[in-house]
Picture 1 (cartoon, rainbow, N blue to C red):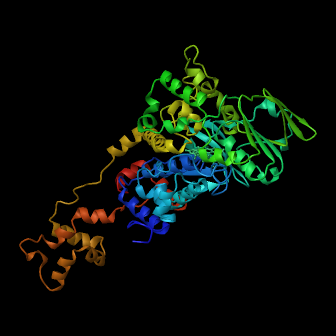
Picture 2: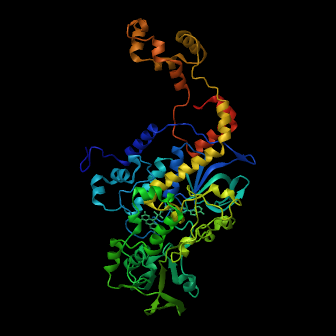
Picture 3: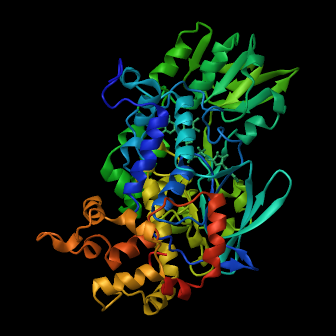
Length: 571
Ligand SMILES: Cc1cc2nc3c(=O)[nH]c(=O)nc-3n(C[C@H](O)[C@H](O)[C@H](O)COP(=O)(O)OP(=O)(O)OC[C@H]3O[C@@H](n4cnc5c(N)ncnc54)[C@H](O)[C@@H]3O)c2cc1C
């Protein structure tokens, strides 16, 4: 027992050991099972995961648990800077309750809480209400390392196109373009992965680039010291950015929004219950539309109390309701903003106007965007319930796969899975939201495994027909079998290692092991054909890292599925 801790207190190193040990308990069934493919002599990936944030990492781990290991994960950001954390998430703490779980897949020692307690102590955990955002990112760094998830950083997906029965991805490295074929691609590309951060075009048309930024941009807040800053938007990020500008010494911050009041109710918190998180996708289109119209159209995510007070504590902060911006122009280095409530003069503007869901804004989808069905293609809302915002969302299948705008024209879309915030209209709070990962990542991984299996069902059937590994290996007596086995294959020293120590002691004292009434014959008790075979064949090993996998793949690729059948399931 350590001071301040409980009996279970341990450091991060010990926790990592525990995670690795616990994973050995979850090794069933052990066999990597997907059928290798190649295109032009080059191996084809089973899954390419684009995005090394929490969603990409969780998906990669889920696939490992399903023994799908022919996978790559790429991210265009440098290591440790994936996602918004440590970059443009400018709140102190994540807004989600600290107890949230998900990418741990139910393994207690993999949870954020286990890691936090190991690093800072149990009492420290009790003291916090929410997890600081850079700490959340540190947890993700540990998660990636302890699970040996090989993210390839600073590699960007630039485009996707169909190529026969596969997808072809173009990946930009610092020094080259790589073409990769994959059976499946998962877009775990984040909050703006189905669109882009918005700055209303009519408002920025007459502004020089140095006069404004969006909340997701890199903003050098030190340069705002002594400046008048205007923020447009009433949501959480607008307030986060206003707070940082004030703390950096802005002479004044005016936060303006169209609504009559600051939003106070967070619909994402309401959504945190298992029924909805797990089964939203099973609602009818009309039901889904109605839920999401209320959540996405009518209830923007409010600032947290902490952020609001960060702003409120400055006398040079003001917020303006009913203050829609009509136009913005640049006058001698000052942005003049005409609003319903009068004219403002700003030295710098931050647009906290959120993300626009619009697939045509994603360069990687440019070659295929016309094939993809949106809600507007599939669903007509009842009169008075229309929503352009919702209608622009992709209409996804049950495992986040894109669907065809014209049925039958683009079946390859079933290989492309959209695990971004844009999935919300179809599948609820799942992709790109911490509370959604618990159900979302599982749904995605199940769907990927299902599709990979079903696509090759005929091959697995042939595999079964060719399966000839006998469970009953010998019709000889155990003693005869063992004698032959010893002389053929087994190093006697290894066999001694397998013997029961009690039996071995008797043997060493010159007693026949089988003489005691309760004893089985020594050989049969300790070294049946099954036991020897079990030791000889592969004991479960955690799926390998990329480097090791490349080595293994050389062997795997060399075998046809027929050959694998010959070697049997434990190969
Ligand atoms: C400012 C902000 C605050 C948030 N706060 C909370 C919160 O408090 N609680 C909560 O539950 N949720 C919050 N979210 C929502 C959500 O949890 C985060 O967006 C989270 O980061 C989503 O994880 P992800 O892995 O899906 O995406 P991300 O973490 O965004 O990771 C996506 C990754 O994809 C990479 N990528 C994108 N395009 C490409 C490409 N073409 N090629 C290669 N890589 C690419 C990016 O570099 C990025 O690292 C917040 C979101 C934002 C933007």
